[in-house]
Image (cartoon, rainbow, N blue to C red; front, top):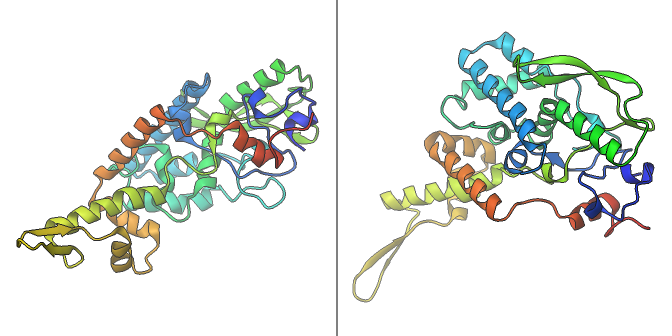
Length: 319
């Protein structure tokens, strides 16, 4: 059952609401994306981005100081945010594991690889680009917890706007990021529920089927293009030489699939991407610059039609 159906909202689909009309009994494969939040002009994007930016700046300081205890504290952000009902799950809202015991070795490896100090991780959304054990789901969970206070206020505003009266009757305690103290803190807030289901609503423009920045895109459009140019510069054996009838010589770079076949040879994409990141660190800045430009000209936001198909299985709610 969808949130709108449970609360009997007078809507016909996502065109009538500002938030994702979540299914209450399970998770939907959508992810809260810190980069979409930063690029959005939604009324709560500024406050959400402030929390995200402060967390990331603090994480960079901790990484530079090699402070293991402080790093453990930063990764101890409490339970998985099942109340958004977003992410990966087969049947019910259960997460994929975001305990500090799971995340600590992942982030420590990022520090050992110098991803922070070499500029390969320049924003929170970069965390999932380089390591196989940190994907969309964990980044989305981390982002949700960082902006939890913002989402709570947003959800309460939506409850008030739609005249839903059963919000906030029972207090709850949860962990959320404090951008003043630069630490996680446990705070009491109104428990927001839909019957027996805890509920946290998320603006439609904050989510996607994947993150805006993906390892696959960084590899295919940037890393392999840089490799093509380097092969061409040195006239490697992979390049294609052609001489016309007048004896004029031209060279073409190898195709990207040729570089994949010759250089990767079964190497996991993220492992090869990490090697290329160290070799061409400037490609990360180019990657993000292009994203900012393309998002402003054509925002990559899921349409109401796409959300309706995903959440309802058809073009809209029956009326």
